[in-house]
Length: 436
Image (cartoon, rainbow, N blue to C red; front, side, top):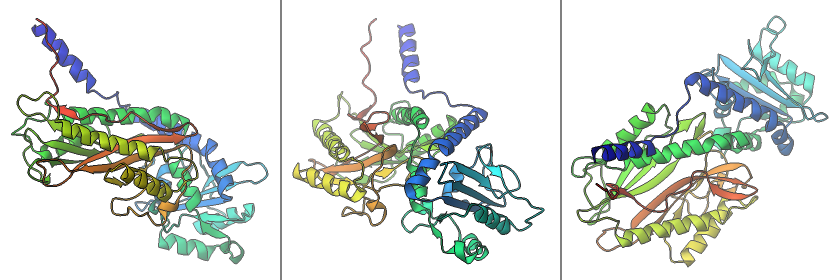
């Protein structure tokens, strides 16, 4: 019996163990390979699609443009002094020059192109490269609706425009359409890696919402929050936001951070960062009362309603539709089925709340100005984030089943990257039947 119990314990521990995280040096190799692939296979087509033949990205150290951060090699943790990147697509050949007005190469993909003997001033060196290539449109990272694409600071913008001759100053445009595509588009290899991140996130949640971490009557929700934060760090991942754990309890609404007790409905919001990609997941667990072996039927039904809302939303994913169009259609269909929906789905990838079409925000259910008008494109990833509220006996407020799972959209349609939660996790887990 003791051997059997030990074996079961080891199996349960293995089930909670995410895939091995690469050593830092190997992570850097993968990041640099992914980046080189993106420069070679994505950037030329994106520049052609947007009609932008020159893209200039400028940052100073510790004030990095969000786009530039995604273009630096893994060995560069920040820009150096003022880092200026220039991408020029030749309209005849389709080839993209990748140059840095810098003292040294920026990794292996971007070659240094600053002759400091000839041009002691960095802006003069940049202008010389512009004049050599005679672009029709010079894109800079300015944007009203996407902070990710608005990373050029006032000083650099002003000095660059002052340095450009008038005939090129008039060709300056916003890089927003190109920057958004660069940030939102995923490569085939990135999508081979992404399932590992989602699986790791799911396994961290499964362990955190288990008897391995939670002892009813003793453990607080804040204890679990910090367990998640520490677990992410111990496994070698980073997180892009502080996790949260909420309690919904009969007789009251959302409980403050307090002791977890039997009968509680737990909710977690958590995300990890690895190889410059991010996850964003929300799941639920139910704390069993003495004598219970399953969650109450009413909670199970409420959970099913949230799953149904997910299905309604993902059925709206079609290329060319805007976030606001998908939001309006999904809400109308959900309300027709007597659901009480709130939808706040967003792109994910290089950032947790990433560039691309916003499909609602929790406080904007009539549409999102600007980012909600962005159109859906293939090869993009989304956090399917929403909640369905259900009035249940004994609860002072409707119970909100708040779900979030990461998904990928391409020509084959929309699919969850690592599956989705279809039933409540239980604390403690139902013990397996033990034979002597």
